[in-house]
Image (cartoon, rainbow over all chains, first blue to last red; front, side, top):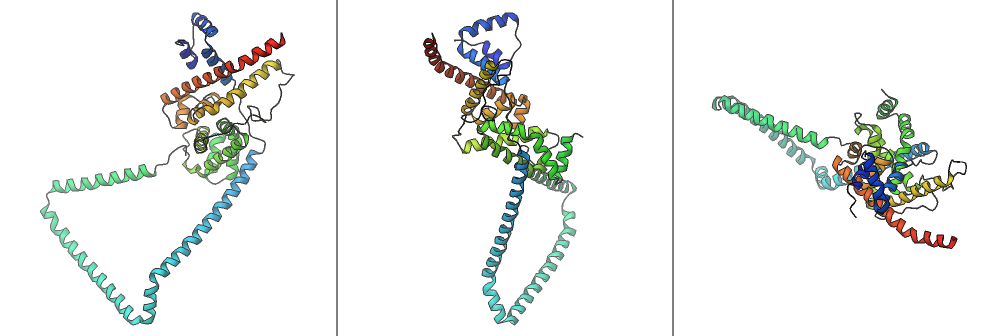
Length: 174
Length: 200
C-alpha cells in the first residue's frame, strides 16, 4: 500500500487542511501501518517521566564520598608503587657504580671533576663561536632573507600553538 | 544570574552542597532517560548515579554558555549508549514495574475513566518495551524528543549528530515502532477474536 503523503504528514506533524484530514481518515480505515503510526504517536505524546526512588540525592552523596575515598586510596597506592619502583630501578641502575665509588672514591672524584671541567670549557667555547657567527651572519644575509626566515619561524610557532590548542581543547558532553 | 548558574559556579569552585542542588533539580530527567534507555529501575538508578558522578568529575569542562540540562542529559545518553553497546542484550523487565518505573498498580477507580486510563497505561508500557528493539542512539533521540520535549537541534547537540541525522533517526524509529505496534496488534487479534466468540 502507498502510504504517501500520509506517512509524511504523520511523521512531521504537519498542519493539514480539512480535505486532507478527510483523506487521511479514509486512508487510516484501510491502512494498519498508518493507524499504528497514529497510535504510537499518541502514546509517545502522552509519555510520562519516570522518577527515581526517594532519597536519590542522599544516595548520590554517599556514592560520591565512597568514590572520593577510593580515588584517594588508589592515588596513595599508585604513588607508593611509583616511588618504590623508582627506588628499585635506581638501586639496580646505580648499584654497581655506588659499590665501585665506595671502594675507591678518589678515582671517581677525579673523573667527575674532569667531566665538569670539560663541560664548562666546551660551553665557553660554544658561546664564543655562537657570538662570532651572530656578528658575521647579518652581513651575508640580505634583509628579505631575514624577513622570510623570521616569517617561517613565526608561522611554525603559530602552527604549533594552534596544534597544541586543538589537542587540549575541552570537549563538551564528556 | 539564575539559581542554576549560581549552583554550577559554586559547584565548580568545590561546593558539594551546590552540586547536590543540581542533583535534586535534574535527578528526574536524568533518571527518566536512563530508565527509558536501559529498561530496568535498578540499572537506571545506577546509570543516573554514574552520570552525576561523571558530571561532578568533569564540571570544570562544562561550558556555561550551554544549558546544564542539555549537558547532563548528553552525559547520561552517551553513558547509556556505551553501556548498551557493551552489554548487547539488555533485559527489559515489566513484571514488577509499570512504565513509570513504579510498582505496578491497577487503574485508579476514582479517575474520570479508569478503563481508558488503564488502556493508556498498558499502551505506554507496551511502547516502553518496544523501545529496547531500537538502536541505542535512535532510542536516545526518541526519548529526548518525546519525554524531554527536546528540539531536533538540542538532540543533535546532545548526541553529537547533525540535525538531518536526528530527523532521519527519529523518522526511522517512528516507522520501526509503528511496525512493531502493528505486528503486535495482529498477533493479539486472533486471541481477542477467540475471546469474543467465547463471550457470545
